[in-house]
Length: 329
Image 1 (spheres, rainbow, N blue to C red):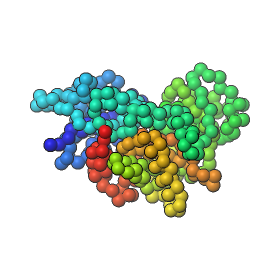
Image 2: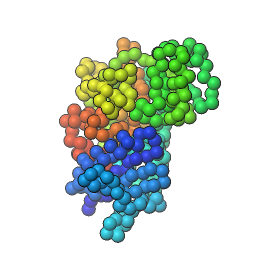
Image 3: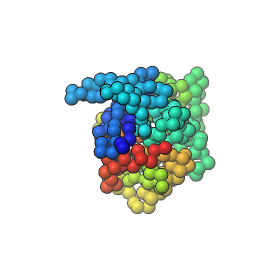
Image 4: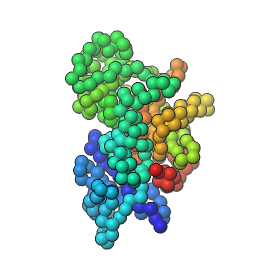
C-alpha cells in the first residue's frame, strides 16, 4: 500500500517564493510508484492541499484538519498523511515550530527535530551551541532591537569590514557587508526589519564552501563539497537564486581539504542530532575552516545546491528523496 506524502511549502517569511519553488520541484521528483503525493500550502492559519493547472495556477483541493494533519479527498475519503516532507524555508517550517506540531501529533517528517531546527535556525543560538564543539567560528556581537549601537566599540572588537545579519532567517535577506563605520547603523536597521535580534560578525577572508549532509538512519553521508564564487560582494539573494555566482561542484580542492570539510560536516550533523538532509556553509583560509551556518531545510529548487550535489555524487534525485522519506521519524 502506498504511503501518503505531504510536500509542505509556503510559510510566513520572506522566503515564501523560494519555498514554493523548492516544494514544487521536490513534489515533481518523488516516486509516484511508491507514494501518493499531496502538495500542501501553508500561509498563516490557512493550510490547504492544492493542485496546479497547466497554466501554473493553484487551486484548493481541501483544507488541512489541524487536529491530525488529515484532509478530505475528492472522493470524500479521509486522507491520513504518513510522512510530511517539509520544504518551508524560514518560519514555521525551519525554526522548529511546525516540527513541534508534527511531533505532538505523531506524524513523521523529513527534517531535523524541533529542538535541532530551533537552535540551528537562530544564528546566535547555533554558534553558542557549537562553542565547545571544536568548530572554528567568527567572533560576533549580539544585538537586540532597542539596544544602543556603539559603532566605535563594535569596530574595535571586530575590525572592518564586517557583516550584519538577522539572527533568524535565510536566503541572505537583511544581510549587509559593512566597509565603513557610517554604514553600520543603517545595516543594523535593515537587519532589524527582518528580525528583532541581529549579529554583527567579523569578516573572515577566504574561499567559501558549502556541503550537504544526510543520513538514512544507519550512517552519516556527506555530499560533494561545493565552492561558491559570488559575482557580488558575498553570496547574497541574487547570487543564490538569480545566477549571480559560480557554483563549482565538486569543488576543485585537494582531497585533504575535502576530507577535512566532510569530517567537520559529519561532526556537526552528529553534534546537533540532525536527520534528513542539511547544508552547512564554511569559509576556509590558511588559518583553518570556519563554520558560517546550518540550513536545516536547504533550498531544493532545480537550481539549488543540494540537488546539484546529489547529481555530482552520482545519485538519482528520486531515489535520494525515497531514502529520506523512508528514513523519516
